[in-house]
Image 1: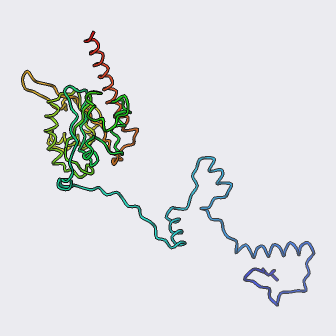
Image 2: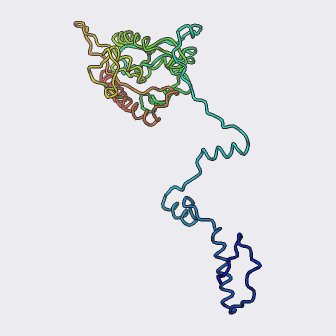
Image 3: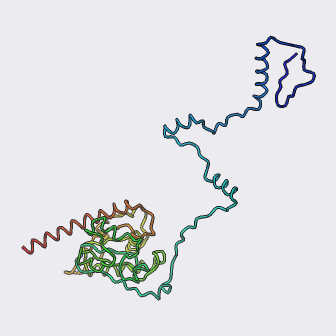
Length: 309
């Protein structure tokens, strides 16, 4: 007669024999085996996705990442527990074009800082609200212009926005913009008014005749290119840094007063709202300009000293 298995679903039957007495050792072994066999059908099987403590330690030592609960799962668990709905982060929306009438009430106090024969003139986009109302260039706390000037060695010390009018006299540097009207940010300007400012830029440079001009931002160079070439600049045509000699600005071709124009350097924007490049990447581009300015300033100083002797 087969030995009955007493499991959770197999209670002892009243018909089980009680008159059979096996040997002592065999009885103990048989009862344990049959009871264990009955429980095996209810044993939890190991999940292949879980990791034992030992294997987890070994994987961490090897630099392997262990599977974690997804952030989605965590959020759902939290929401189900406390009943609170997840909070969505709001995205910063660009303001878009704004007609001149929007800021017509502002008095733009900003003026150009220019003089003849400077080493470099920096061409910005347009004055922001703070810059326009204070009358000092790149005056917003988040703007990196003055910091980049210093880090790139364009200036030997960190200057303040209030010193913008002294730049020509102090360091042979000038400041102007492609558009004069103030806005909150560059997106409030139209391409048409930016393109319209190119002719005035050319005239200013031709009159002042600096050795070089630095375009402070990609969008400014795109406007200049659009006006000169009649088409948008292609991705493989754009580059930061010094441009070809054919792109010099302020060229004068008339007779004895002819002039080859200013060398043209395209720098990154300094706006704190622009997050397309990391700070060290911007500094690397500006350093190329700064190294040249330092060299030219030293050469001019040596020439002036020689003349005085």
